[in-house]
Length: 252
Image 1 (tube, helix red, strand yellow):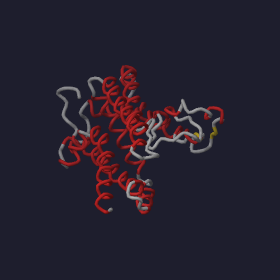
Image 2 (cartoon, one colour):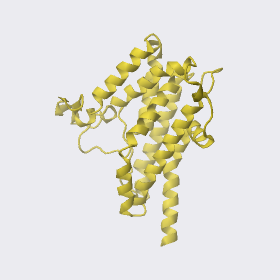
Image 3 (cartoon, one colour):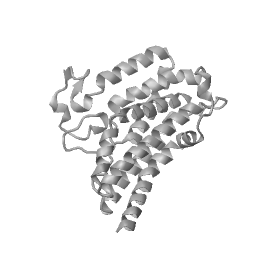
Image 4 (cartoon, rainbow, N blue to C red):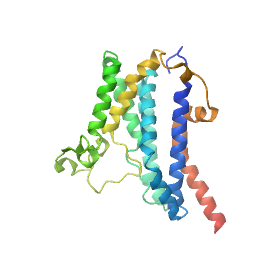
């Protein structure tokens, strides 16, 4: 973070809350996958309704923090490398241990890493744009492109040609055929525009013009998790799997 800036504790806390909710959500999927209990899948599916709100909060806050970062490009490279590590584990190691369907080819860390790198490159341009205009344009583009993975734009009013969905090498951008699968999938389009939205409103954070309550501490737990969100994300699945396997061993 940029030196001599007041820490915005509420951003840490919101991000920490989002991470904890994500871990809680994923745990039910593992109840089904590891313990073989079907009710885990039912709870997981039911909670998917609110999942996009936590995605959006996490990505917006990451965008805001890119405005406060000394080197967004370096952070992006580190985050993307962590994403590739998860790909290695889920694609190569997990199947060897008997876990199928856990492959992550382009998940949230891959997406955030790319967004950070691109934002870092474009930051000199972004700083010349009125943050309110940039935020509105970014949000409109996100909403317009939200259905791109399914071949639709503008809430289904515009259809894209099937030809651009024939190959999977464009999956990081949101274009892939029916054979593509990633247990965690966040294509750069449209999510980069949600990240840009966070970057533009992050000017308020950079100028220390956010409401006073955002600079105060409200929860030590959420704040701690938020400050260490990358490591909690990387560790949460191995820990959950270990707990589930231990439960299975005790039951058997």
